[in-house]
Image (cartoon, rainbow, N blue to C red):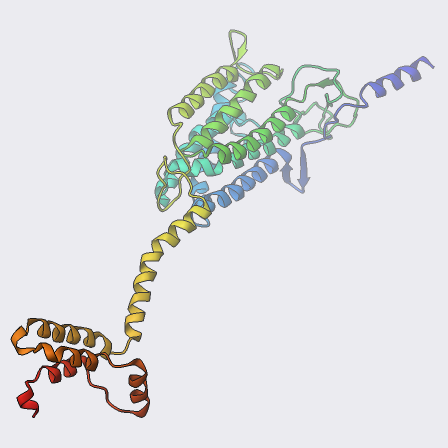
Length: 405
């Protein structure tokens, strides 16, 4: 009765906790399929896919991110492994270490700082090959990188690693004893949990970092649109956001790690990298979004659509006026432009004539003859008669009476 009650209480205590997978590797014949490696590959695919879409939106060519990733990914993997081996040197080169274990990447162990540093060198090389600024590429891939890190943390879940101190919280992670099925020896990475009774329940720090990374990705997208970040500032914000979370998460972890004065080395690195990222954001606070094929000046603000349309219409108005004037001139009869200069010349001739040659007595008949009634002119026009021009009428009136007799 007492044993049954204890068993019931034990099962109830772990009812709300998170169970761990019973294994982290599956075998297809002699070929091992490791969850850690699969999630790393999945994260890389997501980062490349999302980065490709973002770079194309900035004027890049399709396939450009893949071309640069050919350089950046291998450099990043090598850098991440080197950082892990260096900071955990006793594990591989200590009295009980395994030097060959430093080459077994599939067993886990990639330091993000080394991956970013050496991966950045590979990215710079690739960017120069494709002729684009590193800052544009970095801003485009930053959200995808931090999401890839979140996906990679699922590999730590399958490996039962990167956890914290024991906890009684309902989201505590159950840790099982894994053994080799063939010989029954303890094998945390390659073994299988035959008994699902947890040996401890701990803080799932891998899960804390996973959720934090997804939050950083959302922050990057929001801040980029809200503050028009560019010139590498999106990537710098990613670094600052990630290190801020890594600082407090690293303090919670209980797995073995290299320490200085009782503090894990990654805590120091987080502080230094965070300070560098914030300094970059401050120094380059005026850098705006960049477009491949012609960057917009940093001080230039986007022109609203309505204002742009009004400016275009105002610019087009003088051109339309000229076109309308030219069209109207082309539609006029060819004789009209010549009539006005001819009439003006005749009037000037009359004005210059000596007063002696124009008797006063003849002024009234001339005026009457020149001022033809409108109705008579209309009737003559309808009858097809040719009306005399004003010049002909003036010349006729100016003739001496002797000539007319």
